[in-house]
Image 1: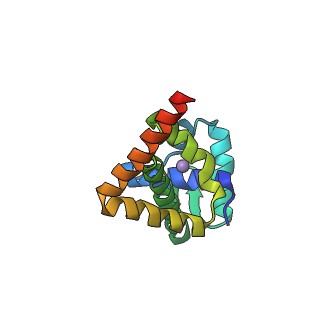
Image 2 (image 1 turned 120 degrees about the vertical axis):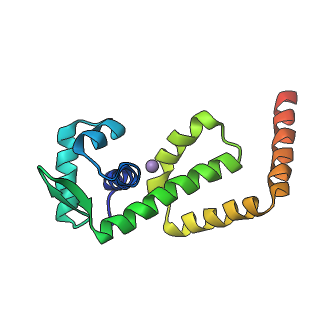
Length: 144
Ligand SMILES: [Mn+2]
């Protein structure tokens, strides 16, 4: 299993390749806000563990294994953002909250959260009901 930091890289590399068709060390460094030398080190590690193939002057490509996990990691991030939105977390907290928890949940928990997201998406009334509970709680807080 990749470490949390490896997961961040694989997630970002998969996204870059999806959107631009390639992932350069400089792009990875910029979007992850790390030094390019850290990217090179990590990319070499990911190469050694067969998530990708890295050639200094040619760039990198994900292996089948790297693609598969990259896709799952991007899915996990997006699912958790959806989940946060549905349960009413304020927009400005969502990204950092997801970054904070995504590496620490089991895939079992991710699948169960997927069920919840589906439950709410299948019937907008359910989201409305949740909002009613939330505004009641908000009201009680104000009265305390
Ligand atoms: Mn993420």
